[in-house]
Image 1: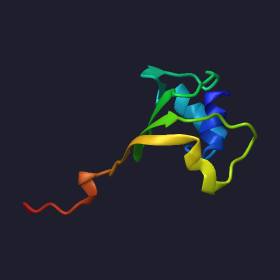
Image 2 (image 1 turned 180 degrees about the horizontal axis):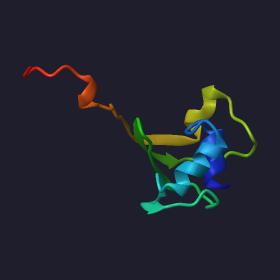
Image 3 (image 1 turned 120 degrees about the horizontal axis):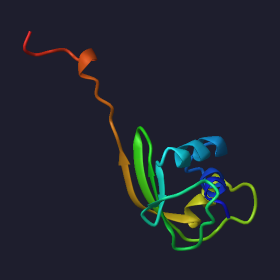
Length: 99
């Protein structure tokens, strides 16, 4: 199964085109190596995703057979190793305590 399709079907990235873009920008790695959207993935591969507001590492437990999955069973297809939510801080918009 292609990497971009797996990311989309499992709900890790909402749309396949976004998964494609993330791969092109080098935000997705498979087993520590930057991966193209067309890369074939396998069971036990580790996928690292580094987006603007979230950084995740998952391990593939099984591949998806069809084009969709019910939300309730998505957790059966991968296990989360790391899930860090990033916060974006822009000093310009925050009050300056020195003033």
